[in-house]
Length: 66
Image (cartoon, rainbow, N blue to C red):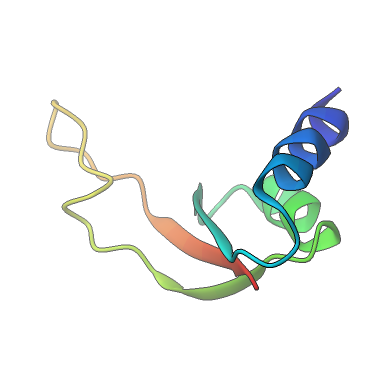
């Protein structure tokens, strides 16, 4: 289902527009999934973006599909 939903979203966006997303850096399964769809890791997300109300930080990577 996840593959179908993601493919539908990418089809809607179209092949000529870049897409990007953030993923928890420790979620290797999700990273592999997004890589299978053509996304590549382009950098780390600043800690402020992934900070929870408790003050804990979810380390995130930014992925992009050109």
